[in-house]
Image (cartoon, rainbow, N blue to C red; front, side, top):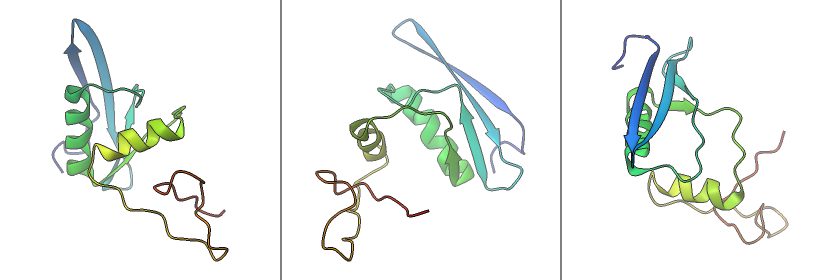
Length: 106
């Protein structure tokens, strides 16, 4: 792990706008939580920092996100090509029109 369990904050300036991310390593490594970030329409610089945290911690948690399905798909595609969700026993996908989305039953 790159940060020895320490909380660290990143301040990124993009187009004269300050963007701050707070990354908190979890008590249950290898995860980390990234706070103070809205995942919609992130700049390339922001995404680079998020991606780096993912590489360092393997699992990242984003709380309190208000993402439309399209926002979630667009953000997820920045990590690479997405697989399609499996087909249900009924022969349908979980979210019509969005084969990338899988809903875990609870």
